[in-house]
Length: 601
Image (tube, rainbow, N blue to C red; front, top):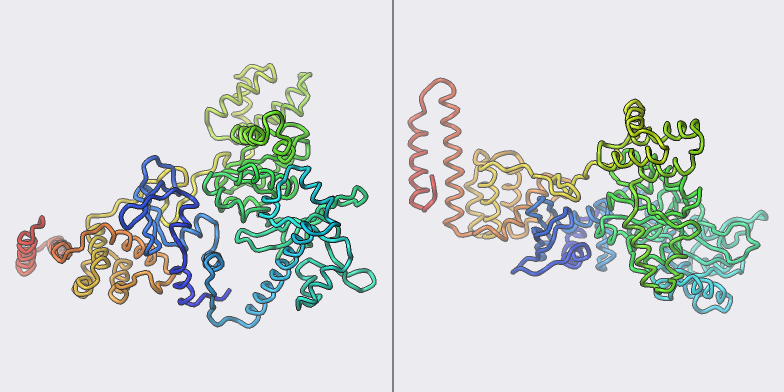
């Protein structure tokens, strides 16, 4: 993929409202020139998260998560840098420009853009047809009967495809698209006699979008009992890949990040009903199966997935398969115990005597009470086993102890072992002996290790202790931050700061960069130079807090000078000789200057 021009990146950065972006994940309050709030990267009770709205930078003093507007969007929305730039450009109306790229790559990008445009035009037409056409009256009645209001239907772009065989074929060509493009978008297909006709006809249409909100395809539901396929999806193509698609991820991803979980249901109407009820972290896998790619996509946004699939046998088997699918991925799977014969849409639309609010609370309660997947697995094996005969109970025990053996040593496992013994009418000691000899399904940890936070090793859910800085590193960073805070004095001081004053090559490169970019330290910095980018981001944040008087800057430089001289003396003495007299004189002079400035030598 071609790179964006540096001007594009700067224009996107300048246009983005960083406070608005961060506020989707945590409440911010103004504190002088900054904003503060609870850190969205780890759990805390006292606000330690700081946002510099002018420079578009953030920093957490608890877990040390830090970065700029692009880093934040990448981390919280699971996007690559290029996608984060495009996402923000779309959101704030910035036209992007790319550097020169390979002609074939450019052609493929333009083609995908054309296919996406065709899908968007079709989606707009389907929505208009649903609400305006008499032919779509039964579809409107069906959706209303499922308890779905016009607001949520319009929010998700639900539409209706007319029954005519060539509506999209004709309208697409009138809009300037060639038939092969419409076919590539999955909107039309070739007939047996060579002509083309609409892929979707007489169906309620659910647009399927990626995390950035770009349409990848459609799901279409028929209302006719005579049509064998109740649901038809777009064909697999350049844009649509069912295994990699999670329905409503574009609408749910912010709430997923905010709530710390994704609720996974089976179908489109389940998602719409949940969002309408305010449970906006809900997405669908469009069927009972969940794929490794879908788990990976969700894992980019959260560490906990709650499966709220149908309670029939197919649904239960799908949830058990999910355990294998999630193997090795940093995600915790839980299972919501949906009542038999009742899916989320049914539950949320029925309301019952308590109305819609009571139905929503009931569903939330089921989600909150979701079991860890191993617990669900064990109970499913026991429910399906023959517990009436000793051989049947032995077979059930063989199966469940394998699941227990794969679980980490925990209270949950101990309680589950006692539950198994009770269900089987067995001695708890027997269950423990069989568990200790079982091989276990070592496909992956039942409870995943914490995921690293952005750029610094902060664990999601709990702040990891950051590596403490040495006194030298603290001193040099304070000095560089002061240079940013006071550019006029900073330029003079940076010219005096030698490589030997600094603790390593990254600090040297930061000094060199700042020497040329003090007026705009983040402007034009190489995004791929992660070490330099991270350090300069931190320095800009620190510049808000560091006193930047000429005296304070001079003391810091003198302290670094003193430490440099002491290192030289130490090296000389380690060789078996005496400390050189000239170095001793220089050290004494610097110590005297520090004392006159009011510092501590």
